[in-house]
Amino acid sequence: MHCITSLASFAAILILSLSCTGSGPVWAASAKKSAGSTTAGTECVWTFHSYESSAWEKEWINGEETGKRKDLECEVLAEKEEVERSVRLIRAVTAVVLDSATSLPADSIPLFSRMIYARRCGPNKVDTGRRRAQLIEPLVGILRDPLTMCPRPPNVSREIYGAFGPLESNEQSKRHLLPAPLAPWSDTPDDPKSWRVGGIDDTWTPGTPARQKVLMDIGASLYGGWHSNAFAVGASWFVERFKRHSLAFDWIVSFEIEKHDPDEIYKDVPDDVLPHYLYFNQGVVAQAGARWNPWRILKEMNVSKQDYVAVKLDIDVPEIEDGLTDELKNDETLRQFVDDFFFEHHVNVKAMNRSWHTENLSVTMKDSYRLFLALRAKGVRMHGWP
Image: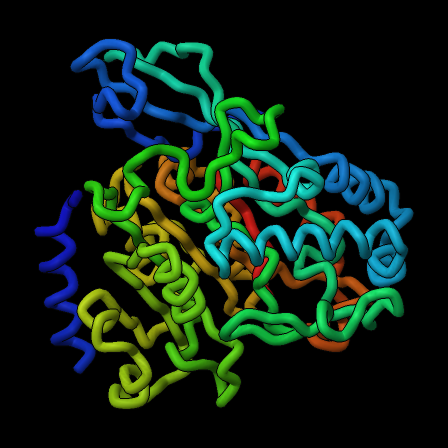
């Protein structure tokens, strides 16, 4: 594992104190023949190459850019074709994430957008021409589960509408999300039978040497929920979903500004998770390089480009959230560390104004689409968080 010594020391100190094209992440093959190196001893890596929106996503981008779907998101999502797409999408993701399916229904594959990676080898990382595609949920609707938050369409059964996995509810549904280690990939994407599930190289296989897996939870509440809401969770949702695929986080770094008693912080953390769980009962700031800027802390944890890093940001303070997302968008080095970024972007949109109280904001869903697309085009797997 990378950097265990430095991180272990960091953890010990903390525990005592607590009583397009882009340049995204690098996925290393470590010169293993099994990973596809053409010559023994030649190091090859998969690097981010480009992002491809699905046809479904392109329809939504156009609708928000032209204003034709502005504040009509719920009405559009209730249309027959949209409902059919949403049901196929959720069934496909649920099968992979919850049921560990090893294949996808052929009719669901075109719904997904794709992150494209290039195979580069040798000391100069020469492009070999090989490409690998990995699926990611499309950006549609209000960038949440497309079957929730809006009124239930009459042609959707209650059974499907309310079929949530553990730690989820209508308002806190995450059943549409595809984290990178669980997302299907293919070297021959035109062949619907070629899609494999899990990571984009063999180091994700359980039982083989694996890179570190780090979760940074910004706006963590408590491990067991938020204000007695057991569905409003972050870290525990990721832990549960990853465990289904025999994956565990080496480090969970949580930030929460609301003050809690230490006993309250740790009471719901499972015994096997506790040694890896770091909890800062402290708010974050957006000023680059500042003491409580989470990006500064991530960089100084000595994570490498080969590590897997997932970040969840949901603190309900737009000026700080905007500052942190801008830093990620503009910092190429930082983007090389962050694989998955889960973010609840608070904007002025009719479907969410009652929950978010954002009627007076100037930013709209069009701005959300632009932000999410910009980061995906730079190699960050950007996801809407509830």
